[in-house]
Image (cartoon, rainbow, N blue to C red; front, side):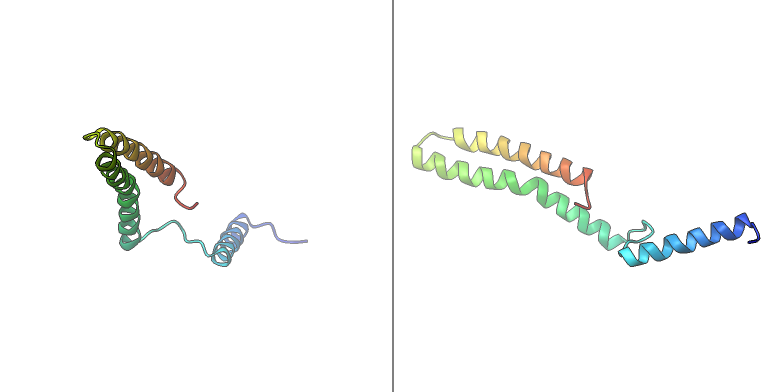
Length: 96
């Protein structure tokens, strides 16, 4: 009969979990500074890119149609909405 030792069972479970994580390519949850900076950079581009494209498209449409800044304003606001929504989704699911 096997000797029941709860401390040995916990150690075995921890080793098994560590090996499973290594096989899956996961870390213990520690993220270094460069990974944080990369995430911040991606988040910034996710927020600012849609409004810039909206503004460029709006300026082009305003110039073609001659409507002043109507398309620029609407597409800029739409770009901020899209950028905010994209950032929200990205922060909610950073690994997807």
